[in-house]
Amino acid sequence: MIELLSAATPNGHKVSIALEEMGLPYELRVIDMAAGEQKEPWYRALNPNARIPTIIDRDNDNFAVFESGAILIYLAEKSGQFLPAEPKARSLVMQWLMFQMGGVGPMMGQAGVFYRYAPVRIEYATERYQRETRRLFEVLNSRLADVDYLAGDYSIADMATWPWIMGHEWVGVELDGLPHLQRWLAQIGKRPAVIRGHKIPARSSANPDEERIRTARSILA
Image (cartoon, rainbow, N blue to C red):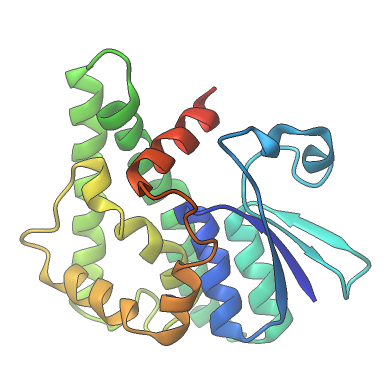
C-alpha cells in the first residue's frame, strides 16, 4: 500500500495520475498547504524540502520518497509500467522527464509567481518567464509533431508534463499555433486514469482560483 501525501497542484497531480494509471493501491492524506502543514516537523522528517508530494511505501519498510520526478520513477519501477527496461527507450523517457523537471515546471512556476502573485508588477521578470515558457512549449510541439507521446509510447514523462501544460492559462501563456501540443493535451486528458487522478486531491474551496492563490502564497512564504 502506498500512502500519498499531496495537494491539488501540478506536482501533486503527477503522482495521483501515475498511481491511477498503474493501478497501485494507495491511500491519500491531503496536506493543507495554505495552513503550512508541509512545514511541520513530522512532514519535514519525510520530506526535508517541505513540499508536496511525498509517498510512503508501506510494503517496503515504510520507505519515504520525495520529489515528484523521483516518485514517478520509483512507482514505475515498482509496478513495471511506463518506464521501459531497454536502455535507449528508458533514456528517452528520462530525458523528457528531466525536461519537465528542470524546464517546464520551474519556468511555469516562476511565470505564475510574477504574473499572479508579485506585490509589484515587474514587467521584465513576467515577460522573461512567459517567453521561456512559450519557448519550452514550442520544443514540446516540435517533438510531438513526430510522435504521439513525448518518449514515443505513453510514459511517466507524459504524466509529469501534462498537469503543468493544463495550467498554461494560469501563467498567461496560450497554446495558439501549437497544434501538436494541443492534440497531445486533449488526447491525454481523455484517459480515464488521468481524469480520475487529476481530481485527486479534490479542491476544497468553492472558489478554485482563491484556493490556488492561498496555496501559492503559503509556498512562497
